[in-house]
Length: 219
Image 1 (cartoon, helix red, strand yellow):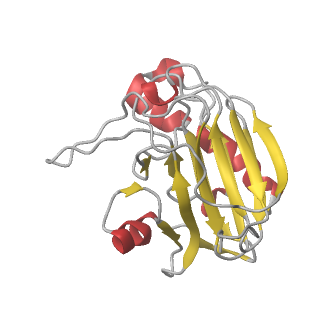
Image 2 (spheres, helix red, strand yellow):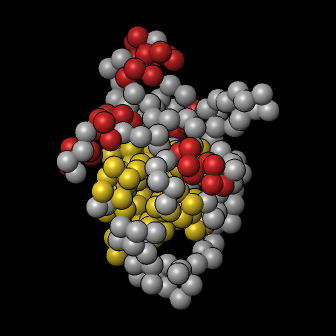
């Protein structure tokens, strides 16, 4: 496993919330502009699927194409700016304790599981189900589902463009911290996938810690 620097480089200010998301479960929260969300891979090798929207206009959603074009990389690292479908900044990765995070692997679903792993997986719970559950809490529907980020997930891309989901590069307690550039609704699926190595075939916990972003150097 590859580890980055786990020591904090930023003062994120006062901790205002801390919640543990059980294995396979969803979570959502509205971040106010300037707040920082730190996601903790509690037990190691756990993918955390993630969507983000303008909290006041959910038609303005995280855009994978705009984000990748803006940084000319398919991975998210420290300094990456998550952009919406109008190219405006939505969130910024302040620091990460792993080398990179995935933007290409998508969210598992009954349909994708069946296609990739066989019809016996049809009844398995997927990230798409988690997202739909959280959408319903915010007046959103399946139409609002866009491409997602996979924090901590390892999807290497070969020179010929081939990609695959392989063993993770995270370990217990490693983190990624993102700052809201404006009020943002963030929706998480703590990935339930058991058919590939993204969760080490054993989904585990994630922790969501929110800071007020008013530290000495978090601005």
